[in-house]
Image 1 (cartoon, rainbow, N blue to C red):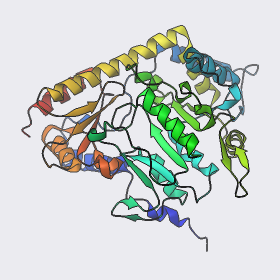
Image 2: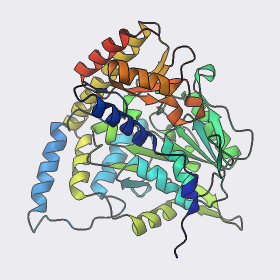
Image 3: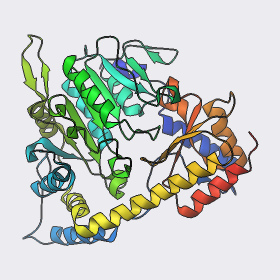
Amino acid sequence: MANINENYLNLQGSYLFANIAKKVADYQAAHPDADIIRLGIGDVTLPLVPAIIDAMSKAVQEMGKAETFRGYGPEQGYDFLRQAIVDGDYKPLGVDIAIDEVFVSDGAKSDVGNIQELFSEDNIIAITDPVYPVYLDSNVMGGRTGEAVDGIFQKVVYLPTYAENNFSPEFPSERVDIVYLCSPNNPTGTVLSRARLAEWIKWCKDNDAILMFDSAYEAFISTEDTVKSIYEIEGAREVAIEFRSFSKTAGFTGTRCAYAVVPKEVTGKTKSGERQALNPMWNRRQCTKFNGVPYIIQRSAEAVYTKEGREQTRANIAYYKENARIIKEGLESIGLTVYGGVDAPYIWLKTPGNMTSWELFDILLEQVQIVSTPGSGFGPHGEGYLRLTAFGSRENTIRAVERIKTLKF
């Protein structure tokens, strides 16, 4: 009989968004005429822009001709896209990234989950709390977290983030080998300052730790006192791996394309204490377990970096940012306390009084037919908060705010 990976048994219940989907489905079944507005899962709603569609259509036509047909592509990504990433995302920031440090994938979620395969089970991880679930769950699967007691994993170092510390976590007081940071943050919608990120890079260097930096929402940044790439910070190439995505930047949630940057300077240690570069290890992992993103999708992603692509995708981002402003200011106008909504498409709502996050979720669903995301689903310190997203239509965003205004808290 085959033995199972018992680490999976340590996972906490159903996946957050599966739980939400079941609640909404049950409500819809009981109220088939309900006009439900979904401000929960962070999926985009605007269509792919014309520049991307044109590139996709051209690539489709190429696949129908023998002379331009493409079969298996490079697991790391086609050079045309990797070079566009280097030239479009990093050179304007004054950041020097080599093309063979860029690895194209089918999603930042995949990369963040898969990168933990490069590390032994005895590594100690630190995650912010609340946190995007994949950081924690992938390490649960990898056997680094131990069992959970009252929702807290015994081997995980939690870095609480809440209003009282300005959503900027303190440094761990104990040994940590790998730190996960997300800025702009999902779920809180807040950013870490440039100065604070510089302190984190120094801390990682001083403590021989590796930083997993998720910047999937960098395109939404409007605050000047932060960074779009962790490599804007001196010394980051020695300790940081960066994850980026076309999902929210260009609406690729349904077409799937992202990338990770693994600088050649980033190293881990063998049991004998020798330094080992992670770049060739990640390359080998991808070559072994991943067949690459389809050519059609990579040509579509390349179009994001054209003049037209930039203008059109930025217009979509501006649309979502305006939605975020409408939600933020609308909730504030009725005395609710909210965070985020400026540098990210997420609004982090403080629940009124002593209400739990699931209680507020139920009120919004049952009384005004709005789907949200309970903060407790992102970790213990997410309790007392609720996440709303700005990815709906303008009409639905305005309608949702007006509905919430009718509630008496």
